[in-house]
Length: 167
Image (cartoon, rainbow, N blue to C red; front, side, top):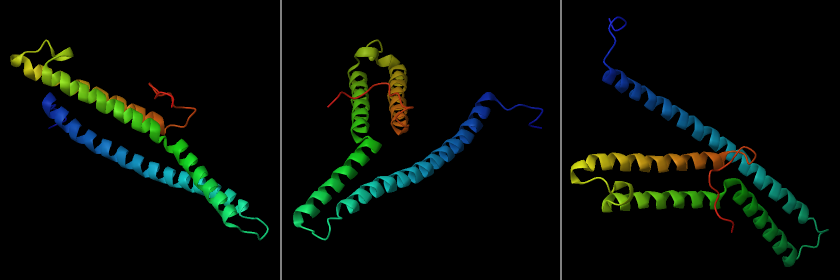
């Protein structure tokens, strides 16, 4: 019967929305799994390479002084810190998250005060202003997701839309 009679558009959209939610969750679960495996292997590589150079530096011919051990320990810590900082890009992630939070806060203030893009909406058209507000906030969130994905790309493939200022 359903092959002959096509359901109403609203019903088809509802079914589609339910199906898409499952697809989205499956993609996100797979993404988390692959990211976890990749990060685990990358961490092993970084720690292993720092540990290898540290162990090689400890070969002092039997003369282990506190100065030698301190220098090796500091070298290990710096190497490991540089590796994790370079790989995970904490500074860039922080910058982009703060940029998005500031943009969303700006939208909230403009919406609340009825200024900027919301100045043309009066009390009667509050639902239209809310629709615009929702769309603009979602645009900011989508841009943040794109930036996050670009940070997760290898350096030769990533071209972020906006770089944080140099330190």
